[in-house]
Amino acid sequence: MMKLTPHEKKILALIEENPEIITDTKKRTVIAEKNGLSEKTLRNRIGDLKKYGVINLDKEYKSKVAQKSPSFDVNKEENISDTFSVLNKERRFILNLSILAGFIGLVYALIATPFYQSTTTMYPAIESESSGGILGGSIKGLAESYGLMGLGSAPTYNIPDIVLSRRIKKNIILSKWQSNAFPDSSNLIEFWEIDKPNKFSPFIILDVFKSLIPSREGFSTSTDKLHLENAIEKLQKLISVSEEQSGLIVVSVQMEDPNLAASITNYIAEYVKEFISIEQEKEAIKQKEFIYDQMLSAKSDLSNSELKLTNFFKKYPLALGNPDLQLQQGRLTREIEENQAVYITLRQQYEIAKIEAEEDKLFINILDTGDVAVRKSKPKRLLILLSSIMFGMMSSVLIILNRNKLLFKQ
Image: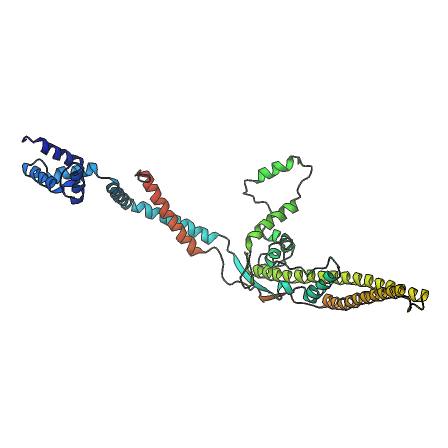
């Protein structure tokens, strides 16, 4: 090996520390400036070392670059290459596991209990602000003018809250329904066989054991109530209600029997319609009774004021010449006029209130009744099959990567 000058040794040391300066002009310029050299001088010295055979560009440079350069991209490419190579070798395992998962999903889709959906749509017949009719505006203004507190506008009702209420669920569950399984009708507890214990349930022994232990609270829940609670929880998952921006209410019911689903859906629509009608009628009667009480009070005040004026005339038949008596007479006359105006107004409003109470109003329009479904709403067999195959494929890939220590390899 030839003997190098100190200057050449310095250049060789720079090449060993920064092998990329052999071909990278920008990097060579930066290194040259840091060491008090020009890029041209450094390039010439590198050329001399190549001539001397000190620098082997094919081997030396590549090895130095591999040591000094960041290895992230290289490792990344190697990892990707290794991953695809392993997956390609294990493609039969991936295929088998995907087919197995797809088969399991298909079996589940075939044996799962089918559900049928029925839908009804409802639309409020009147706006909430005008739901009180004549009573909601004129009577409220009258009450505020004369201090008759307690009279307000007719209440409004949120239809989704009524549909999802516990009250309507109990009515649905305890009502009798005809179905293919029970042609003579049955309630939903019997239809779902909630009252029949599952022979294969692992909780039977636990339930029997609990029944033998006295309750610490001093009371025990009856079996009927427990069955009802279980039925309510199940029914709650099968009823859905949504409200569109236009105000349209959409109620859907899913059941194992298509005729039963349609019957329950239409029952809900009629129940909501009747419930709001009855409640509004109660409110109208309540307002009528309130106005009637106020009218009787106004009538009594009017009679008292008339009696006062009559007694005044009896006591002072000639009060024209006395200013004090004239002033008192004027006050009594104005009191009669005020009481008379209140009584007449209340009497008019009472007649209107009677009409409101007796009038048969339409508060809910049922646009679409629930029809008997001709197709199952779930399970969706194709979706289950595709999802199962994808799950099997992803699971097999994860298993292979973990088995070959490639899952968390950096």
